[in-house]
Amino acid sequence: GGAMRKCMRGGTGVSPVRKALICRVRMTLQRMGKMTIPREKEVLIHVLRTASVMVAVLAAAALGGCRPCPETIVPLDELVARYNHNAAKAPRLWARAEITATFKDPRSHLPFTWQSPTGLLLLQKADAPLGPHGFALVGFEAGEEVFRVGSSPTDGAYYFWYGWGSSGECRWGRLKYAGASGVEGVEIDPLQLLAVLGMCELPVDFTGIPTVALTMNTTPGKCAYVLTYIDRRPVSGRITFRREMYFRWAEDAPCRPFMIKFFDDVGRRVMTAKLSNYKPVDCSDLDNPPDEDPLMPSRIEITWVDPVSGKFKSRVRIRLSEMTAEDKWDPDVLRFWKNLPPGLGPKCTQVDGHLDPGGPKP
Image (tube, rainbow, N blue to C red; front, side, top):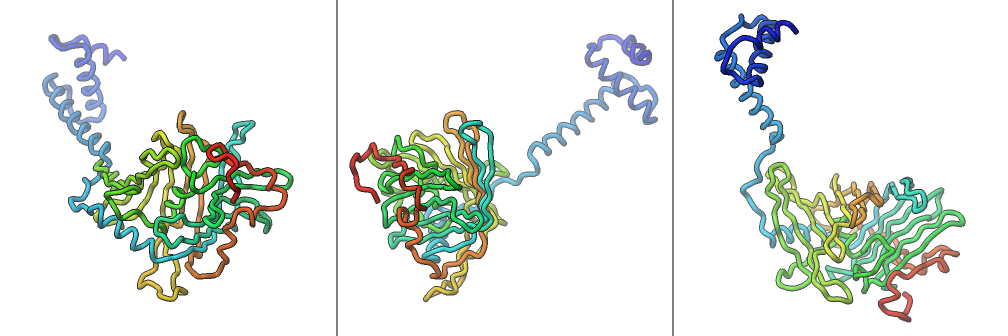
């Protein structure tokens, strides 16, 4: 306006940018009734002071009020010991599972969602602390079993199948080849997936393989202990990073896993699990129940991404309830072939047949 042009014509020895800033502040202060037109030097001082305050405010906002990481550090041995002490309390698990799965349709590439509010999660641990353990995540629809993913040490197999009406698919592989390079078709390595339950123990020998190594995220607001699980790949024997487990590192929060990242054979992230809402597993029915029930996440969200593009592939959300270690189910329900619905057998594809042609089926 005219007032702005008049202000810009006055004064000398000031750059146009600075003069525009000065004039803007002078006119704003006049409208607010804070002052009469001051000298340019006084306005400039006011501008600089205001800018300093704004910089401080913006800096505080950028930091988000985040506190620095705690000075207290839990060493690797103690961190693993705490985790294993909790995990070892329950030899088995039965839980109701509300399952919501989102996949991309292979033809349209559009996402579609399927829900099972009455699913089950079953876990039967092996005598060996590191397994392999048997488990199954089972989905139902109208009282009929329509979806299952799991592993059966008795059959030596891990598997995934679904069946809705006349449509269905089945894929399986042998546990001894789980996670081997070149094995595709089943989106999970069950030996890794069980880590999301927080109920299976970690290695305690930090001089051999498998083992875990500790690093720390020291970024304020993101403080975490990061345990990297290291193991040999089947067949090749190559030592690789299999997963990263993120534990809370805070003075006022329990040191429990809240996120796990899983990697493929070349080190690309293929799956991320977020864990929350820890609740007790009822162990009162055990012959020697623990003084305190173990805790496990009751909210689990698992997301798969394409390892090359990083784009979304699928997601499974699991809400657990009524978790118990009571001996109330037959471990035979974890068997693969024995529990496969009629008609799906001919549709089963073995994902690792090329590694051992002619090898026995489970």
